[in-house]
Length: 297
Image (cartoon, rainbow, N blue to C red; front, side, top):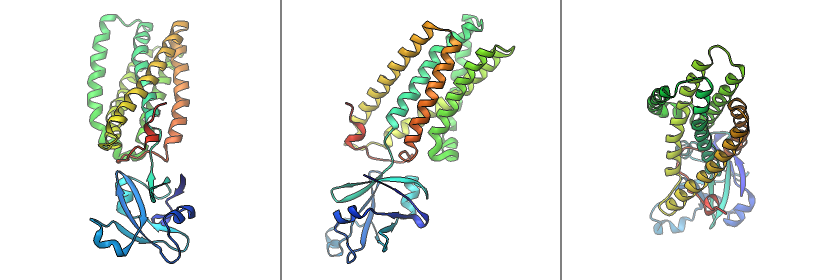
């Protein structure tokens, strides 16, 4: 596997060892580009076999620096931009461009912090002397806000594109940390501010659920759909269960203020690490998982 950057002019430099495998040389510099299962595929183009092929992709010539110009439409469809670093894999004498690796871990973390928030919310409100009969009213209002927030998913995606998951996760976790800080400071307006933050985090939460669903569906093919569904359920449930157990144990041994701050900071670090890994691997268009992507050991 190799990493390459899409440079100006939509040029992609092909590693020399890949060219050797494709049997491309100075005398044979034409390649065919197609999109298959959400990947840009680059293969040797053989003119003598044109009549035998049911379809032909876009034919490009390699220049003397082993570069090929990627069609603008391909980049647009797969949401790859100039300057993006992409991965190249050679499979059966076909170079395949891939952009996904860490989505399952990210979804597990986001699901976990949402579940922890739900658990901690009751303790926060109890700490602020909110009457139990008021809980149902607060939950009803938050659910209503979540429903409205879900309608913003297209606007959020259009504005942030490939940074959508980054914006949603970081805004969520910073709001979670802010609630811990408010509990620590114990100012006069703690309760209204906590309620505002609880309402605000419904926006990233609702849109995360929709966008993650789009990812999980688009990243599958009929061949891989069942395995990907199992991998998502299995991995996210494991991460969520472990995180909730540790968060609950922490809350039992300390107060809600410290537990919220500690959990928030830990998840902030985890999100930063996962997002850094994801930034050159995740887009919002179809990709096909390899066995390596979905195997659970």
